[in-house]
Image (cartoon, rainbow, N blue to C red):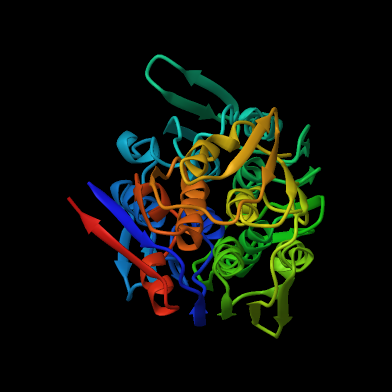
Length: 421
């Protein structure tokens, strides 16, 4: 069993380089199979979810060649649909994108039920609504755990209106529609930076997509896509996690290789807490100059405060002065990590989708569990701020989304190490 050992109380200083965005890398890797040609994807984060997605494509017949830690060439000429390995697909939420990709390339799809972090009910009804609008029939084999989709007459462009803003559904319908006949209009689309990145990737391959980053995306289907070289955007959530770590521990860190505009909602809340932040063209410097103040946070779809930063900021608020409130506006059941923070002396009360966080003078080290990816990041942040030693188990949840987090934190002066038992 692997675990992280964190000895808290050390401020962070220095520079940290942010890796490519997990949430952009996964759909772009899957979408590359629509070209049937070679794609070179650069600035890929070296994380387990990306490695699994590449293993899935290889099992489907793609030729995958790693070009260093952060670049890979995918030749999807010989990819076959309906044969993705169930044991890999069932461990990743991003495997849902295979449905749209197989539909677009082969006219039918067979994909195992996806896995990923458990935030309660995470339905794919909006995905299905989009596929059906494009002419596909979708069925669920709940007994064996498979999703089937079939478009016997091909996919055809149509208007798709999402009842709720869904990042996954927006991505999946974009993937399905890019080779469909005619024009598709996605209304009430998600606006996240990785939606824009996927559109940019597709357009580099010859697609015709406009409006990504707004609530209305228009896709004019094309007959064929071609391979390309493409660089993934930086990971705003990784950057935000390091910003939160500095807020919790103190110090001054220059966070490099980022797009500061993507960080605006996180930066605004940290400045409200009392952090000093300077923005540059592709970096942010964050410094703790005074004690942290209480704030209120409500997570919302982009450009609102990201749900994927909620646990990390809650960990920081555990040591802020006064009573803060955190309200989750995207996923139910996201507060499972709170029980782990309580083991460290945090004073948090959860009621429905809101939590009241009463700051304490200091957290104390304890043995805690990473209940999911971002909850695990919150445990690291709390451990860095705590007095004594914190042991974090189930770290595979963390390594699904953070590229060499131990090495990067150690370079900033943190006392954190990974051990195997």
